Length: 382
Image (cartoon, rainbow, N blue to C red):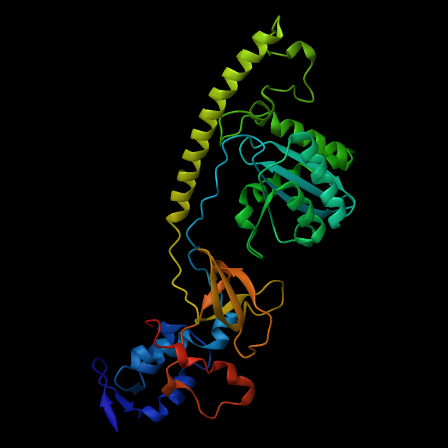
């Protein structure tokens, strides 16, 4: 049976429902995108709803999902808690291994933006915990620590220390370090500074001290003050300053000094908090322009963005078994209900629309059984 093409008047084959999956399979053999695949189909075949079926077939193609690039808009930004004083909320991160230098542990105060950099020979839980305890002994106990899910920060040793001290632990989403964006953004500058100084013969420990001193002594754009001023109540000399360049006021008595210091700090804290709040709103508005809510639900079929080279871009399929907060989902292998489940950030997930039942090839080989995930196809509009 034939039907004339409405534009070219060419004879189109009218395909019965039982053979539509074969027609689409032939036309999609080179795994072209929707527009090109539909161009091939529409120039040769016809049936009612041919475009909708072609779109469903292409968007649910497992090979395309796994191997083609996918750049979705990111999930809406999640606002971090803005602390109201120094020492309240810190984040920690490990950089390395650096060439012939070991590792760097960064501790960032989220209010003052003050950083402390530690040189580590190894990153065992005991070593990392020892340095964080050293930080706490000098700078005070924070109420919250943010870290990634590295073994050092999820170990029993680290958890016990924080539980004993009454510190709340927060972890970033797996393979999504952007959640700890403030500390992550420090890494490129730290690495660049270290490598540059080492080229001049400066060892790692001294390179870290130089970078730390200068970073903490310069005005931070998020607060309008230097990290040193907000953290210690005064500006400290930079490493290359001389005593003659000290511009700090001289107080003749301690009482006058304390009174003046408290007044200045109260003013600085209020202005810094106001600036931090405004900057976060501005940043969230910028990010929101390129983001949209993700309409993923428990039971949806998704693919997970792969890590490492020489792999398919996405692996799976998985099914969503729980939603954790606004941007994290717990997933499990679709064909193995006994497989370990794990939680990932939504930006690593690619939704796979279910293929309509009449477009499934019923002579599919056993090793291609993963394509039979059309049971949820009525949940989302294709």
